[in-house]
Image (cartoon, rainbow, N blue to C red; front, side, top):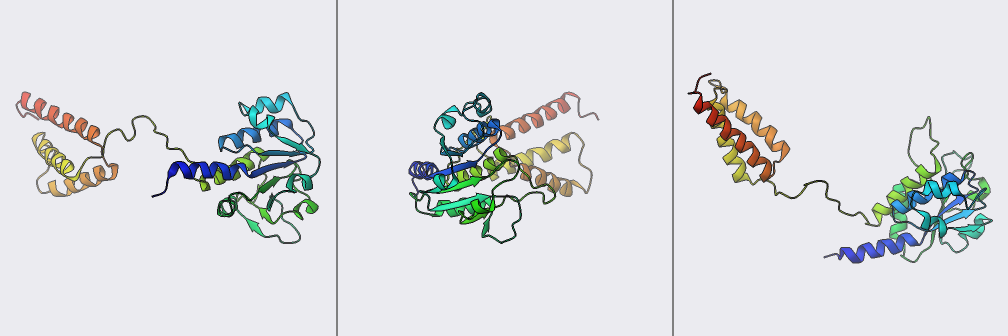
Length: 259
């Protein structure tokens, strides 16, 4: 059996070895938004290559609580410096290139990174907001990463692009946390025997209130079974329905069976 805690720790360690590299970012707010996207997905290793403005109050504001990611960001002056210690370099781009390049989707990128040795250092590079990566920068990359989207409008905001890629890495690393919404999962699903008892009760009630028509009861019950079987009632829901049936029968009895 897999130890989920150990797997999660391994996944977190793996993500810490992945650099998100932004090249010559023009708008400091985008840097903050990227930091926020990274922290959402438990990624912290942010590198900034010659940002136009950084540090910046706007970046901090857009980070919305991911100040620690911004504070730990490494600023350097060249892409070569940012990727010098990496064994795998992946460049994100939406533009078609004259010379074809080995390509991958964010999901393929995540699978490739997760399947590599845990200590392998990886850089995923995002270019300028208005022009992306230049050809000489792509020369440093092993792969070109493309995010599948509307071919007629393929330009993504840099933070949105980073979010998509980081999400796939987060999922591939097995870091999803189970979150219970409301009372989901508190009550077990009804058993087959409980459902059969309910169907018997339902049939009796529908007869008592005069809903069933001669010769059609079988087809009506079959359709009702299909409805409730699709829903997959839990025991609390079943109790509520049984209570409604009992009250309907009681009211029918009080009215002397009059229609």
